[in-house]
Length: 551
Image (tube, rainbow, N blue to C red; front, side, top):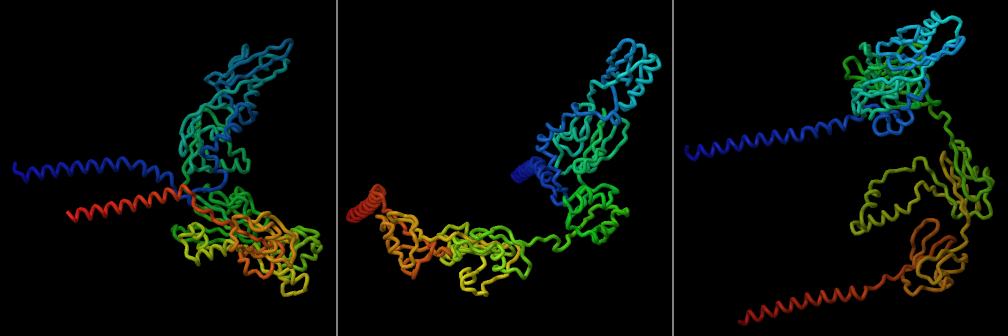
């Protein structure tokens, strides 16, 4: 074997190893990919009504309330007696004859002197009648009391799209809901409205669990029998309800369900729903294009209009129906509260007059009108700037951020003093639904903050300047930044240099900043040593170079 053949053999061997490695990696990651695909289904295709919280850990909350079926009353016309049920019989004639007997595995109840009574597939009501007839054939002129005293256990299976398929041993009077709440729960993709129950004789029936949970239809929460298999399928077909119903959303499709029944299980129509036009949007036979059909609600109640897979029911609202229009007046008016407004007619003066006018403590200069409707505007630039540090902003960006932060959203520019004291009707704006009028108490003082000897509030005097107020507060503090005094205007929140303020107004704030502290001695000492060390290193290196050059 020459060198080329040896190299080819090694290459082919490496190639085979690579193939095996690739296959191994695929098999390793395939389960995780599959599980991720299962964990992230198309959420738009899944039902989303609120009762679907029944799946998952929330069942643990319901379990304590709903799983105690053995303590519940029994409907004798519904309960089927069977092997394991214990029945007490009292026969009263000349003397009482008490008998307690259990139905055996063949469905026979044995009564001494009477014999066996076949109770297979018999309701409790029918079983009592059979027992009574059998006793009366043997005993004459007696009173008979019959009671079920011990309920048997049954074994049922929960399979399909559930968290943990398993068999359960339950009390004989358990219903479908008891089984669901006793289990580990249903999956998010489970079909609540088409649950199958298959009995021992392979007879299959479907039940709509949502109909029981939402409407209380007991027929959709059947009594379980021994050997039943409860099969929960995965959602495949859906329908949706949109608009003016109590519970809009996506629902499971149920065969032959009428539109009127679907509206009912969606909670029924809201008060403002249009009943003259209900739109049904459905796909053509090709499943590619959609068409709309229109019915009145009365037509849907009287006609057999059946839903199809992927149908969408659209129920629209009556425009401006019971649309309340109010404004809120708060603060220092005689009668604060809510007041009705007539669209495009009621003015600010009208509402203040209806509220009894201003109280003597009211501050017209600080009163404001805020509008809530149509004032929310997205500002991506402001949202972006809020996340940036100051060092990463330009001056324009920083100024915009400050101005935007001080903005009072919805504030309508109205001069209450001009309107109510000077009678300038140009300020008499027309109010809209949702407006809010705020009239605060007059602030007859100036606020001093920061580095003054006695910070606090000082009674307003229009003749005093910024320096006068600082002197009244005891003068500057020992660390005051005297050349950087600011005034914060009460009405606008604007910061103004004290030198640029011509006059102060009530509620204004005078802020004296603190002189930044100098560097600490230890920090200076460490920094100085570091610099000296670096200088010494440079000098030593320079001397070493000079000496080496002379040699």
